[in-house]
Image 1 (cartoon, rainbow, N blue to C red):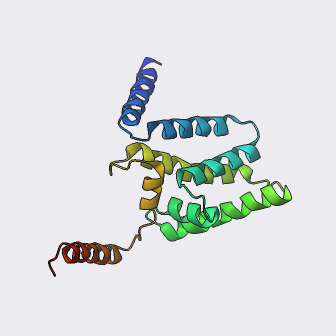
Image 2: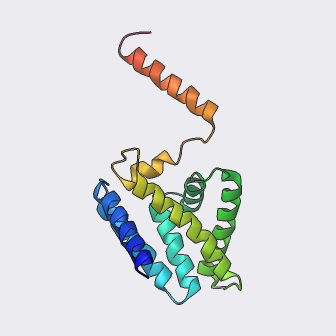
Length: 169
C-alpha cells in the first residue's frame, strides 16, 4: 500500500531529523538499536530482560537501579503512583527471573507493559525540547518532584539564592 509506505517514510524522516538535532544523538541511536534487537528476540523472557536493561540505560540509573529506574520512568506519566506500582511489579518479575530463573505464563503481558515505559522514555529523549546535553542530564530532570507547589517553591528559592550571591538581598 503506497499510502502506508509514504507514512512510514515520513515517520522515519521525522525520527532522523529529531536525532540530528540531539546533542547526544549517538547514545540514543544505540538505544534504538538495542530496542529493535530486544523486540526482535523470539524468547519473550529475553525480550523482557533486554527491555529492562534499556529502561535502566534510558533513566541513567546506575546507583540503586531499581528504585531510580522505576521512579524516573514513572515521572513520564500523569498517574505516577499507578506507574510506580506497575514498574515495581515488573521489577519483581525481573528479579525473580534473573535470580531464580523462574519464568511466568503472563510474560507477553509483562513485555507489553514494560515496552510502554521504554517507548515513553525513547520519545522523551528523542523529543528533548529542553536542550539537554546528555542522557544523564535528561534523566536527572526526571528526578524533579511532580508537585507544582514544590517546584514553584524551589524555583523561588533558587532565585533568592541567585540574588543573595550577586549581592542583592
